[in-house]
Length: 201
Image (cartoon, rainbow, N blue to C red; front, side, top):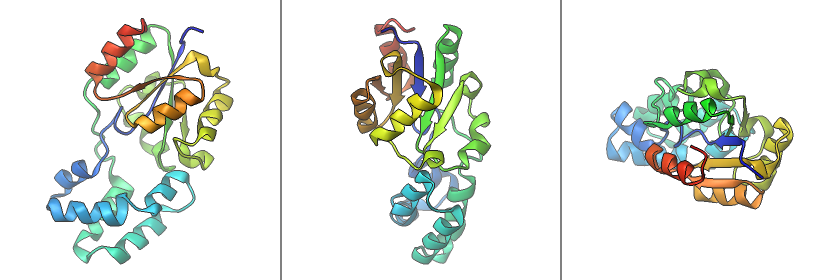
């Protein structure tokens, strides 16, 4: 079956998201970055936030109990305001707009907290998408098989007609196991070349 639907991940594909970005923005240094990773970004609380089973207020309270007081403001920023401003991945929005212009239908499948709905339209290229499925809304996470089925069900998609783009290889493996084609994203130039090789661009 020919590909007619392109599904994108968000963080690491459409926009930058990571401890290094926050460290530079918040001027917390290497030690502060390591503590924020350990006590916020790499905790089960952060996973639960993406699953939609814990509130931002609970995540903040738990992080503050573990972090030194001088990092509380940084934790608050990361939880509530990390998207101010959005930092797009260079070139991805151009690829998105080219795909839309060629007639492909685009969807987003992302592990993200519910607050994603408040900033989604600030991301360059988001205007090209026909719909989104956010992990917190369905209490599922990539690479769980059920989240891919939830995507197919929500938008009435046939897996064999879909191509999934994500920067985390296990998510692509799971998508392929669900019947989709997949590309592991490294940068927009590499993505463009792989899409060309498949006759999509």
